[in-house]
Image (cartoon, rainbow over all chains, first blue to last red; front, top):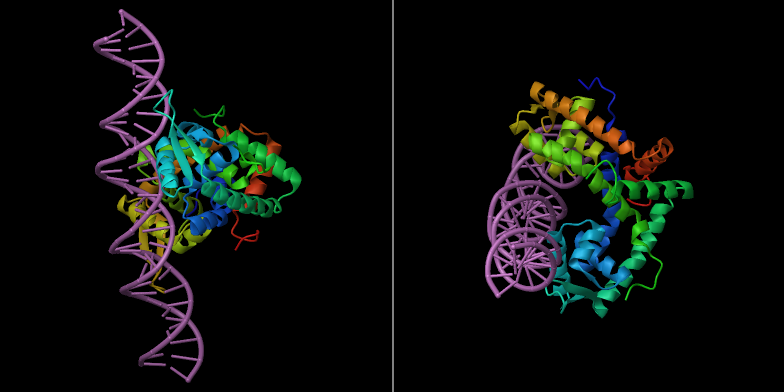
Length: 150
Length: 150
DNA sequence: CCCGGTTTGTTGCACTTACAACTTTTAAGG
DNA sequence: CCTTAAAAGTTGTAAGTGCAACAAACCGGG
């Protein structure tokens, strides 16, 4: 016998968000996984370096809201694949500056194109107004600042 | 040196969705994990049974768009914890009908209350109009029907 | 009735992840 | 200086996940 309350799973934001996130990531995930053997965090590191240039592991972790152990292992594998280089900072030798190799940049460029196309396909499902509101709302919910959390 | 294109990670829907989903699930996840030792899929199974009554593993998997192996393992653990019962269908003995035990229902009731409160806190971050559009958009993106996929 | 094909669900294994503990380096105080 | 604390990453281990292979039950035609 079902519940007697009015709680609606189909209106519960964390549930809806997770469903939409998983579904919308799936196809693109398949591409970078099948073609380059990349995991999600590796893709994220690659894209941060490709879009924003040289960064440290910590900076990427902060920007992507990803735990440092995940970043650490992603960096390790990307370096193993020769997609990035790691250079110790001479001033602060705890830190390494990460950069794409030519090979890494070429992978990034290809994936960026695919991502852009894929994003277009997703966006086509929604009206421009919906998209605008959606992005604003997602930034509020996903941002590292404010909110009912902390 | 950063990219020369206009691709914007902060506007890429799968990225925004994943960030918002992870962040918005985190606190509630912590509750059902710490208080009842439940994993996400176990919570989902519990909520489906609590809200919609007796279901089979397959039906839950379809409704929640979750792979059958995850459902299978979640069901196993929920039964182990005595939160649900499993009853073979006499007509089709491949199938089991799953139901909450009194204990399971009590856990569900408590979590449902917490979820409702939590949802309120999330909703308070957005205007009613934003919420309306957001839910509509998320259902389009997360639904198992239509879309640019398949 | 029985053989191949489907459906429902489970399991083995390789792989990924989370969490805490750890190393190395830097910074701050006395 | 020397001690203690903090910051940046790394690693060990237990646990969860994905994928493919599997068993069991059903279904339909010959």
